[in-house]
Image 1 (tube, rainbow, N blue to C red):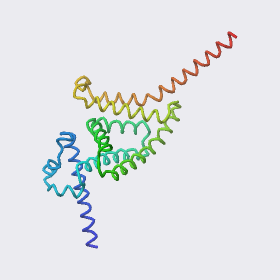
Image 2: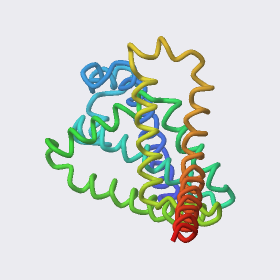
Image 3: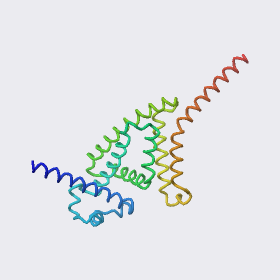
Image 4: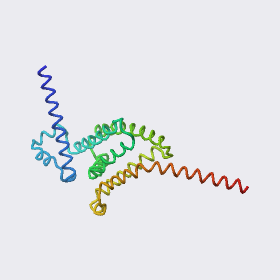
Length: 226
């Protein structure tokens, strides 16, 4: 029993140290970028031996993948709260991305680079994609229900693609060295992006209604003139 308790304590210490490593690595990455975030810097910042880092990952690229997986798991955990309605889930997702736009932009760039040039990362990519599949299954179900509820003609694919595009574009401009000087108050801009995303399927419903009305008017006019 004592050995089991000691083993569990060691596992808890390992997980706590790993989380500290990941959070510190993310902070360094966001502050200094890929070129400035070295394992030597990470070890010095944590005040641990560099060799200790290799108990948690084997390379800097593997560390990047683990950070991306960690971020994706956070998104999955947020959407698994079944008490929230779709608009609240959407706001949580967009704010998670837009409160740290540099993370959103950088993780996307790193993932694309590693997908093309990374070596020995297949298992980590498989883990990442499995989390995304679980995430997507929940999102698709929630989106289908929401679009049906508001009687929108917009497809699930088009709506989710639009949300992703708005969020990625918003993160890019919020992270832009040049354009952010013109953005003004950033919180109100984030809210504006969320409002735009929520309005999209409602506009699609109104446009579909207008098209039906126009088609009916043309049909009535043709019948009167025949």
